[in-house]
Image 1: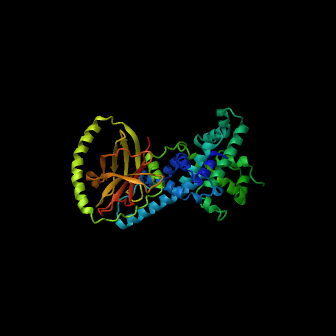
Image 2 (image 1 turned 90 degrees about the vertical axis):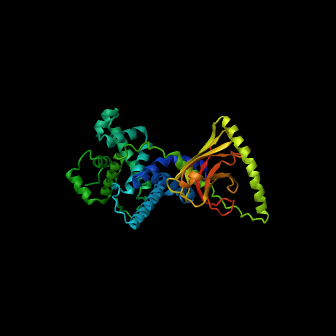
Image 3 (image 1 turned 135 degrees about the vertical axis):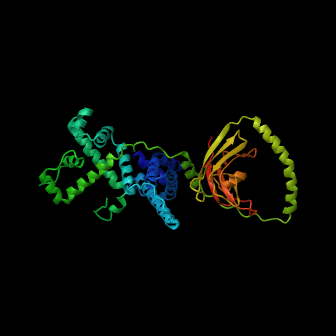
Length: 190
Length: 232
């Protein structure tokens, strides 16, 4: 069993130590999502706290068949953040304040969530697969350039990238923001 | 034309190469290959955005303090104590006794000051449901004899704040340590409260700050604002 699945199992069983481990493992990602969606740290910390408390209290509802803990936690955090934005919007309307909103981040919550899931998967890939993908993603290098830089045969680079992409895609499908709606049909609003 | 080869799809998704005419024609007609390449493109885009997300800084410890405090079973309200008829004369006598003891306390504080002011345990206090988002605090046990509290951004209250030490394993068991007054009424306080000698801080290790009303009820109101676990 991989360490993440083991952690999820202990968490579901109500092991308080697993709550701390889950917090250490995923707290940074949950906080990041909060900051991106809410635009300020205090609210994001608050959402992080309520997310882990809600997750702990609702640990029975976590179904490992449907995805991993990171996707589940980020899903909870997204709902908490969106609720908070909505109630803030309501208050704004009531107060009828005309003050300019802080530069709105046009990014959708789903996109931020998907990115965190992909980043987490990338971090867990075997080293050569990860390195090849990083060079392709971040440095925009071609397969032959990656082969030249790493000293790996071109065929190996190709298969690392193909497998790495397949791993990222699988994880995104399982834990990404659209995973819940995917069962509804083959089409997906991205 | 047959479906596109997986390696070829990856190359196209990464924009490393552009589709040949026959490939474009096939992609336009084949929903399967189109879904493949769209998904791979999306994943590649997400992948390119992950730089800097690999080692996200952890949330500050106060967030954990809040989680830990909140998942500890909530304090159940203690049974109401019955007001006794002889309470008043007893209180008057007690008041006199308090005056007598007050002198002792002053002396005690002087002796305390001479002791090493070593911090033997501390807790960061996280906010609970009823408290404003910015409410926070810290507690320190000094020399095993005093509890120092530094709290900020508590809500304004017509009552007062009481400090408790609670047994997290049985949250009906608790000791009132004293109240935060004066500056606390404007939302912040830094106070030192004496700990009862013999208090078992290994057991009563959950520091709790509650909002209390002037209702003559000595029991915990159930309205906790801040909490944190003492650790050595």
